[in-house]
Length: 138
Length: 138
DNA sequence: ATAGTTAATGCACCTGGTTGCAATTATATT
DNA sequence: AATATAATTGCAACCAGGTGCATTAACTAT
Image (cartoon, rainbow over all chains, first blue to last red; front, side, top):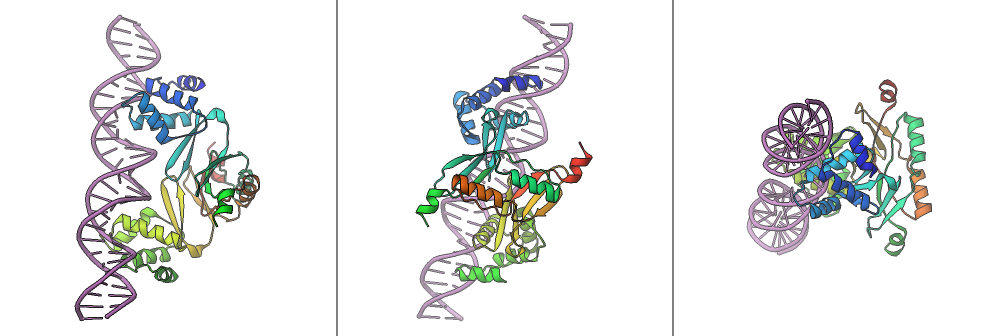
């Protein structure tokens, strides 16, 4: 519900489309791809335009209600209550693993020390090869 | 020249389009965006289709002649002779900094140890804030 | 409850990049 | 040099995501 309140506090309008999108993200276990969100929204409320959905998702991200990750073109969204973590996707079998939020700490440290550059790593999606696939196929 | 030989060795055909694309990447200092490559190719050989260019770039990447990086939608290409490095882009001023190839080593180590997952980090583009921008604007 | 204001929607179109397919062209063979 | 053949090209259409703009709808003040 806090998402709705956050939008309200920002002086944004609570349209049925936005309520529905928020509901869907709330109800989801784990992450949703943009494509899934569009599909679920249009199933429950046919005619909602994809641009409305993308704009709402951007809005929710800006409001801090949702995190957005990218791998290549594809976008993935998480409810903020899930907390920070990153994603490993096996490029052979497609399996996904969540990993802790702290693995990039050393990178942040060295970028800051060496280059004075500050980078946030949030919900990074990494493509690689998992243990099983590395053992089975050569 | 070695790019041309590599293509030849793989039994691929040396079309004028491919020669031109290889030339352009050879002559470039540092990286080129896809958009720049398309522009340069079409300036010297009008009528070359963008799909030909993208396919050739993918081919060169697969052949190991060129590295491809992505930030969001955009793609950036490097000649392999330049060696491995990563990129920092300041989201405020747009400045780009190259950084060493080894900063992700700790991440690779912990992913491997904790999850048995193997990830390659090559020519990663990271968006953040540089020292100057962090100091000047609050 | 009504009217006014301002944000949000749907639409059509745009972007960078990708793909299937028929026509073309580089190479190997004769 | 002529031919066969398989790879490559250009095209047109497609994909996910994004944008400008006129219409519509949510909130505010009356």
